[in-house]
Image (cartoon, rainbow, N blue to C red; front, side, top):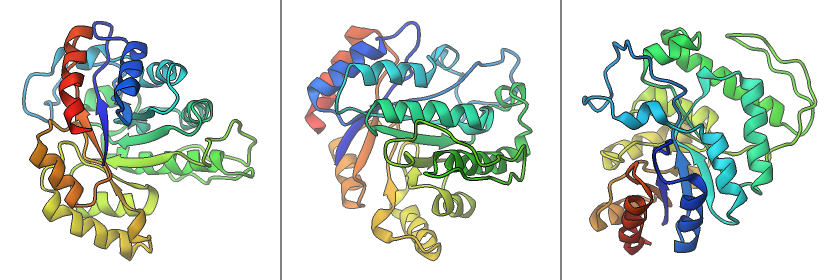
Amino acid sequence: MRISTTIFLTDETITPVRLARELEQRGFAGLYLPEHTHIPVSRDTAHPAGVALPREYARTLDPFVALGQAAAVTERLGLGTGVTLVAQHDPIALAKRIATLDHLSGGRFTLGVGYGWNREEAADHGVTWSTRRALTSDRLDLMRALWAPEPTAHVSSSGPSLRPSEAWPKPAGGAPRTLLGGAAGPKLFAEIAARTDGWMPVGGRGLTETLPVLREAWEQAGRDPKTLQVVPYAVLPTPGKLAHYEELGCEEVVLQLPPGDEREVLGVLDDFVRYL
């Protein structure tokens, strides 16, 4: 099982360049970064974990800029988002950014997708909360049209349509691996089976019960059972927990690093090496 990491990189933490080099030297599989453009001070939306919003949420680096730096100083390290809030982006510009990063990194990028939890942040991007899931699906379809080998049109259900267009570079593998985050449920599992390569469950709790349901939805959609990827994300590891994920067929797990300075983060990495 591949062991990757995630961290809230900010203006106060270890830098992307330093972290990426240290991860590759130690043999970790990848680096995933979260996304928040801003956090409105006047906020009614509670943090999903039910705690005060940690300081780092408002200070995150742009994940694509940070991952571009990481790509430039590594050769094998996987690069991913955990997660990109697709509904908050212009999909044409986002498709270009993703394709460029995947092309320049030699196909090392994984697109983690999420619907978001902060209503105020989404509203400032012009996103009507009740439509964010449909908007995300539509924008994923539009991006895939731009990544297609030949100019491909996309008829939008929620915004401007796309005429057949030349769009280069292409992602190295035709389209990057795409994983959808979110809480287990029939709607999420149907969307995973329809549009993505698998699921990115935060924390990885309850997989024994939920994985059979997802696999059933996957097969009902006509997908090859062997191709489903489930990547537990932001995991605080124990040997037993990681062994359990491996028994369930997970081929990658993403461990949570603290949003600390260089000394703190490298100390935790040295501890995580025992899981490699």
